[in-house]
Every structure is written in C-alpha cells, then in structure tokens.
Length: 295
Image (cartoon, rainbow, N blue to C red; front, side, top):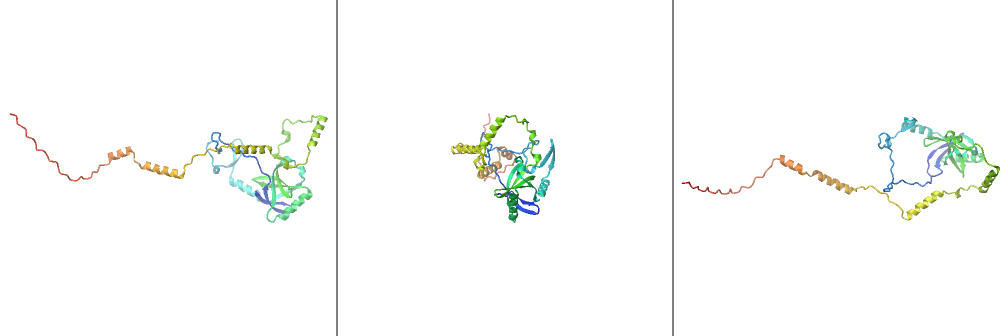
C-alpha cells in the first residue's frame, strides 16, 4: 500500500512514528472527451485572459484575490517554507472524546495508519487504550499544505485517521431554504412511517450495496467493445526521419541550382574567354576579273 505521509503521533510523552495510507479509492469511471469530427482527444490549455497566449508552467504564480481584480502574489519559496515549517511538527493528540459526539457531517477523508520503524509497541498501546476507553483522539495534521483537524480511532484492529472539517467549513443548516419549521403530520401518518422503518431495519452489511450505475456503465462499455462499436482516434501525420532527410537534401539541391535569370545575368556581366583555335590554311583569294573598258 502506497505511503502518502510520514511523521509521528504523540499523546502526553508517548511518541508514535507512523505512516499514512489512503484508505479509500475513487472508482468512478473516467470518460474522455473527444472531437466528434475525428474522435481525437480534446486538449485543454492554460490561456492568459489578457495576453491570449498559452502560459507555461514556469510562468504561473499563486495569488490570493482579496477583492475583485486585486491580488496578493505568494512566491513558491514562501509557500514551500511555510509548508515545511508546519509539516515537520509532530501530530499531537489534543483531546479525547466520544465519537458519538461528532456528527457525520464533519467527516471528510479516511487514512490507514501503520507504525513506522520502532513504533510498533507505542502503536499497540494507543490502539488498546482507545479500545478500552471507547474514545477517539482529536489531533491536528498538515496534509497537502492544509492544516487538518483529525479523528484517530480503531477500525478492524488498525488505527485510522479521519480528517474532519472545521466548524466554519460546515455551512449553517438554518440557511437551507424552504425547510418547514413545524412538523405538520398526523399521529396515524407518523405511526405508519415508523412501522415502515421497523420493517426495513436490518444490520448494516456494506458488501450487499453496490454501485448499480457504475456496473451498468461498465457492461455497456464492454458490450460496445466486444461488438466492435469502437472508434480510432485520428492522429497527425508525422514524417519519418528518412522522409525528412530526403526533403532536406532535395531542398539543399534546389537551393544550389542557379535559376535562369541569374544565369543570364552572369553571362551578360562575365567576359567571355575563348580558347585559341588551331591554325588552318587561309582560303585562296580569287583573282579579280578584268573589266572591259567602254569604247
């Protein structure tokens, strides 16, 4: 099981080196978005709202918007320093309470806790103490740059930590609209409802509950796959190295070929150099014909 956090839990003078492991997993079926025209995956880019150009990761900074359009920029170094200063602290159990006193609305995520090197005995001590006292521990921990309030309890002989929301993170139930203030029901209606509840009451067995939508979706996907109802994503044509090399060579040859205009201009400006011809016998000249004098 992957370790996502290492640290220690302490209560009083007892210190327990521990590791955290994610106890739950999201099994939602991830569906990709494709272009209907060519069935290629859609790419999402980070575009600046003013420059209208793609922003590289190294050009992105974190900031807090304290009012519309006004920001306080926080450097990566400042955030990293603050995170490390808090993460290096041991997680201290600050109180012990009964779990019945915590409404389920506060619970967030669950993590398994395993002892790190040298922490097995203290781990067993805390587990046994929680079981005997029927209490849970309340602690604070920094996870992913956020300080979390957490409950430490026993689940199937394993210590688990459940992060819980702070009170100011839970919205007030009184703000929910249209909630009736009074119970406008008759005695007979109430008795019938309680009877129905009694008939449906059973022991909680989580194994009998399944995600019917996910199961149906997987069956639909499999039936389409086996029935060859599939599509292939279009891809860009990428020239091979051989083609690129031939194109580059041909372009180089074409570049070195003189064009007709250039050749003509060179001929007009370049003096002609003629090779001396071999000596040949001069042609004999005819004797001039005699002209008769007029009488």
